[in-house]
Image (cartoon, rainbow, N blue to C red; front, side):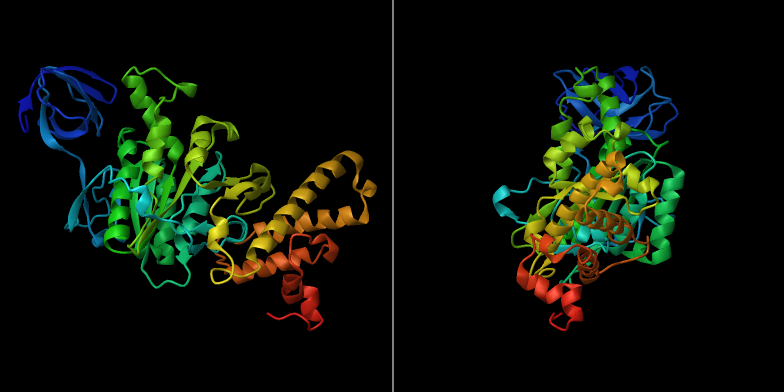
Length: 466
């Protein structure tokens, strides 16, 4: 029954609270918890048995006991207050303002878990999103409505890359409002200060909603942080018609919180101790990206995760890769060379790239230039390994050209300044300049008409046409 106060707490362990002798309690129901000092905490029902409920406490459980703690079941699931006024604001991981400004006046309150999108009403992602980063725009293009994660490792500049994407991303050819919903989970105070400082310094903060869960905040709060952020994003996209980019960092911290709660519930562990339902749980977050037919707005997701020990087969990146539509992979070796952003284009992939590029979207030669750059770089990387064994003097003249291409590709195409916002035309121009290092007969993946029109040597001869 709704709003009945129980004083039948039987156990408190970790982030969980057990209440006995309950009646008509629902899974996912929100509860109000009053500790012996009269302070109020919030929680959510994780398990609703016949006469017992297990509650996940959003704040820490210190001060709660089995004698004087009171629990009130509110009879409803968690709803998030939403409004266009969230733009330019900073909230904690559960959606409460922490920027010193008053609480927003909600235009609506939406269910934390969102509403499933009927597959038949989904619009296929097609529109190009320009991030200003060549390795993304040129080789692993992000399109509107896609979910494309960043696979990183400890110490790599994934936060810097995420901040740059948030600052520079735009949908070309559309006049719709563009917004960024940025959800940070389990990050340090230094990382939080970096994000806030970067957004305020560039003026981008006016179009950014920031949800912040720090490393010293309750781990349980991390489980609701991405859902609060996505609920706000869904309102901006589907109700207000905005193009919304959602950046979730760090999903590894989210999964660790999931494992912690699972262990507290004494569930049978899956791979490496993570709960067996982690795939389903991650899917419930990632699948909230997309476009709905008949509505102008969209949600594009870039989850960021740090791979433990740089292991791409670890359960978190492994399961994420099954759900999402590709990945950007950051390379430690490129980072050690001083290259930023250290995106390794060979293991990176955007499965929806082909639908978001080409004539009328980016440029007619985009697909073939990208394929040729990928092929030449892969060849050069293999030759670099070979040269390390047999020596560069054992290579042919053609091989030396591919090695030169590879070094210049990393130095000129992959590497760019943190504040450099390249247009897609500039990215393709750099690509053509690099391909001119190779003999024309090696450009086997590019149509002759594009070589005639865009190749730098042809342009010098006055035969090309920009």
